[in-house]
Image 1 (cartoon, helix red, strand yellow):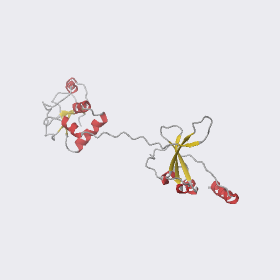
Image 2 (cartoon, helix red, strand yellow):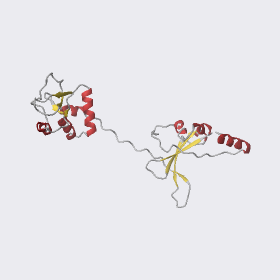
Image 3 (cartoon, one colour):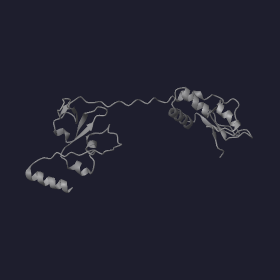
Image 4 (tube, one colour):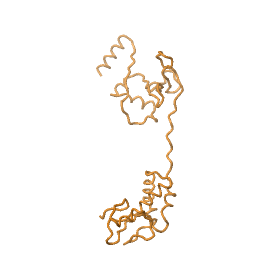
Length: 221
């Protein structure tokens, strides 16, 4: 603040202007795609005193993926500098040895890839109408039908949250090692359910008879 006040006294006494160069934060996780001029004013690192003190402000923002090209943003009092709009684009001169800014065309930001919507109906159709299906088989069939691992998990959660599929946890027959078997079904689990004969299971489930663990099982509570 003492620097600012001292500079103010000198400018008033000797009638000169000052061009201050300041940097933006070195790290900033906030996206700037939707910034307006007033947001850009406070991109300066440090105290807001500098922003509030300046009579006018231009922010220089490097173009993403285009070396040597920059967007000049008239963030404060931009209407007084004769621009049509509040931003212009400049690039470094391509003439060897020449140090100057040259006007250039605006660089449009790259469009983000559109997220493909989940096909919940396709996922739901994999669950048999009557018999349940083991969780590992259901997950494998989702992947076979083009679902990524994340999409398969998301689709399963949404179907379950919507009440379209139900989780079954079934005790193994007496004497068979391992935790409960887990299935998905279109119907609520009946009481005292035994492992369904017609359910789709994986070979890994059958290996539990030999005492091998499997992702379909959970420990007894």
